[in-house]
Length: 189
Length: 189
Image (cartoon, rainbow over all chains, first blue to last red; front, top):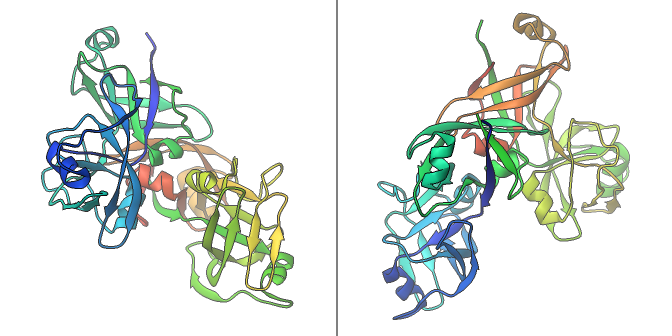
């Protein structure tokens, strides 16, 4: 069976804890839904913040909702050069020993002591999709991209959860390096 | 035999014709050598220019010497978004039907009607290296990158010439997507 997966390309973004959200935007603040993302329950927010490193600033970085337990800043390798921070390649939520950054909102700022990562590429899928593809949570697969910039991504983590929907997540540099477009179908090999 | 190749990561740059160089910098101008590149006879110049598209400008884009027959602007996919230009993935020198851009120097500017490309990844090698690796000019190979962002680049063009030195050329987005560093050894598979 051929196993095709649609692509979702992530730009830099921030997930905030409720505590940090309130420091940046004011006491009792709640995020403003702008647009649903493909993963159920996840959404892009109207709100943006600035991310400040020792070398430079990324202005207007989009916040994704809902709030999470810990604040997490997902950047690209190129963003890391702009900020002057060496972020590790990590799965979402794995923030141990990741570098901190300053984040600045309209009402305040937070000096984080961890939270900057470059997201590892991964495939979300539902339990049913996992069964159909004969894959389970934490499997590692290869993904083939066709075309002039064709390549095979190795070390792609499979994430199976009842709340997920089938999608390969890569960042902008991975997407551009492979000539990918959002929604394009690629193949698990 | 294992066939290892060192990596060279290219940032955006411009090659100028003598005619365009003189429009941008003045009659009879010659480029100022700053640093030799790995390919014999090629060098980075002190001079930079601005590249202007319909949507935005890339300021201070490095000129590489020596001058060439045609002016050529090598950008990344992300640069294309900044400029508002859809540059094709092309081998160096293949500029037919590529989009133009405006380039601006200290003494003048040139409205190009072609010349903006995203360079296809490729491997330079000498005739001797080609023989050792059992590869000839225009062969297409795959290149394996190890590591957390490990991947296999397909469609890598081999360029064999007596004036070349062994090196895989990728752009910054390809380098970052694969977690590469300049000079790192990767394997033809």
